[in-house]
Image (cartoon, rainbow, N blue to C red):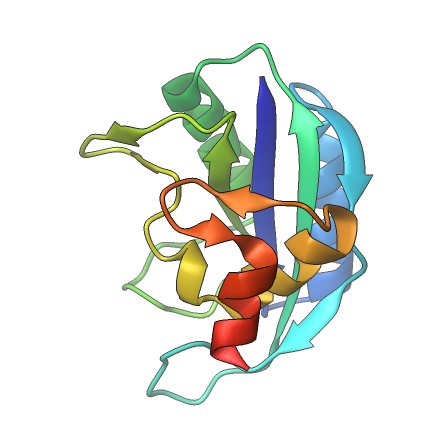
Length: 149
């Protein structure tokens, strides 16, 4: 199944953390495309934090959505992610943005990602590697990004 994964980090060595995460994802995702790295200010955060390094990858996986999310959480833990409070600075953040257009709403996971449409740091790298991308339920990524600019 085609998946779109957003990666972000702003603690430690964010560029290295993104690279290590992509390497770890290769264990269960056939990575087809990876965006360049984007530096962005923390999104809707009140406390002082360093800028984020963000990227998006597109790949294929045999894992079902909740299994994939469990594997992403394992990678986050292996790379030192601490879940202190919402929007806390982090060594790595991995989100499923889209899973083959699948819709899911559960306590563990909502698909497509419910806030991707308002996140330039997701839309911009995604559009870079897939100019015809669409966020299910929200529309073409190009239009969503234009609405934010």
